[in-house]
Image (cartoon, rainbow over all chains, first blue to last red):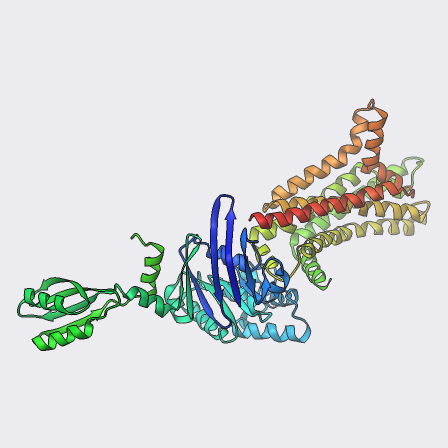
Length: 311
Length: 251
């Protein structure tokens, strides 16, 4: 659905997007992550045919976004980050205008506008002026606008920013529903959001794509360094420590005494998960165990690891 | 064409939805009405060699009222879309840059026409009340209103260009107002400097809207001003198109 090859965007001397290449298949929901100023919005704007690239090319649904811009635009629903709307129009009127502009006509326009209003729960504000709507409703009007012409691809630039938790949940459910029929590229700062909705994650930093994989795989990649924690009552801490060091996959052990209990932090070798072996050791030695866990790697850790490698 | 029409409708609707439009319409009516009263009053004092139409379209009040609305009518066109960011949703819809530009421009032309339409009524009322002809021939009306439109086309295009240059409406208004006043007062040049060379004098009169209007409101037709204003309009619109595209490259 999206094919990006060596896409670059420079503003004067500043390179916002540098030699980016990626592909998104039909039906995927792809989360676009990265710190502020990483180049996510610029990339999305280029894909949405708003900004021309400095170099490289991008294709949406088989149409070059620069050379076949009109055809590509007909197939894209784009929600810009700031959700710009005409404040002087009423909600239905605005959606009808946008539908007409995107080539949806006659009876189909009426149907589509009705559908997206139901989908985005806009019925109770349909006669209100857009300028008088709350942030949450504005966001939903923007979303309704983006999908009113049934685009193949939805590009949503931070659709949940500034919403309250309930609204975020509603938008998330909406996006998951949309994902059944559309390809979606969504940028966000809310990482749990991505884990719940996206089938793939692109992490961008300083204008480059640093990672592109399913959220589980990204976590798995980082889990290599996930430490195991054991809390047990052992007769002799020093001996226990030595025994733990013998376990396959354990690189180092750090023991801390806590009354009659001991905490052991086991640094593991890359890719190893020694929990089972530790458990067997503990039963053999008859240690009372009250905790045996491994640090759960979240997407947040992955994100921090990729975007700030030196910290 | 259909896209153009959808865009044009929206632009026209914006005019008539804002209270500012009615304020402009009201005060413009007041000004042109005062000008009409002023002309009749002056002509009542003694014999005069000009027709009512000719007199009406050549007073200081007429010209002042004429120049004033251009910045007000055009300043919003692009500047507001830049400011609100709506240019982004507009230009990511499947519309051509040219369609957007022309829709905006012709919505301004439409509003300008609405602005001047009531002035026709003054002459209708005059002829009905006095049973006198406001002009010796229909050509006088046609000429005056054609010139009104021609100069208007160019000045609206200048306003359009000014608005495409900035995201600040006040700045757009000042740019277009200054440019239009300079172009317009070109006609006074010879009055301040009577001793200029004949070549410069010819050039001045060729470019002077004052002289064009004086000629056309007598019912006389000259192709030169027509060509001047139409080609000038096309050129300024072409510049506007370039600026509009350039800004997207730059943003």
